[in-house]
Length: 293
Image 1: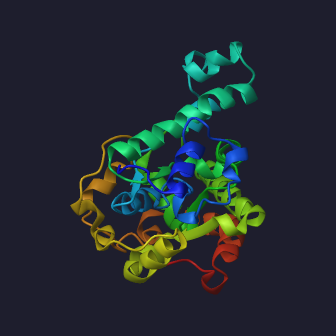
Image 2: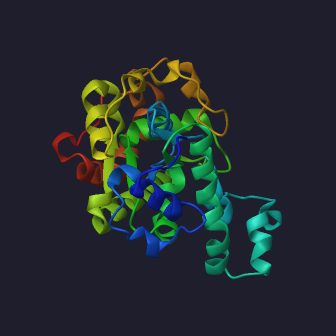
């Protein structure tokens, strides 16, 4: 990363490095274009596409998932090794709130240094679980960060869950998956209610159907200009790590998966899922509150 020369850049470095915290996050000299970007949303909703679009921008580093909060809060399903994980054993030394004060700034510094190594001035964190841990992000960064909440129609999201597996994360039965979808989606919408100025909803269907119009608007909201390479994000190299394995199989954005539920869900599954999630989707997209495709 280029030397931090401007006053705003120096302030950002202090706030989001080892001195991170709510007090310095109130510094009025920081512009939105210096704020960290946090990407979250239900699994199989398109967070990996958004991650690679952001990472293709010359000013933004958005690497593969780092499971900090999931490890910290022991949020794996039926984890036989949960009691042996570092953050759980560390609780024998400090209570949870103090432990986050110790480990959280290291997590932030990890992102900062990764961005610096990549020659970029700004970082983003992508993890579906981020929508569940917005209070923890506030503890680390104060109110100087932005949430991108990626949403996808519930039927297509559930159809995609059936394909991918992830037994430590996603429930194996339809009822459990519906509850999983609702939990993640409702968490993102709750943050919007509390912090509308720091929230941006990214609708998967619109992003992949009209990237040339949706992506510039998104980047403008983030305080950045679109870089044309973001539209062909896989033409650029990206760091390897924890990520949706299918993302490497696409050259760029496409809408081929919109409406996949019609072939991937049985009629009775689709009906049950729609009855259980329709209220959420009508809240998200009232003008198109129906099944896609």
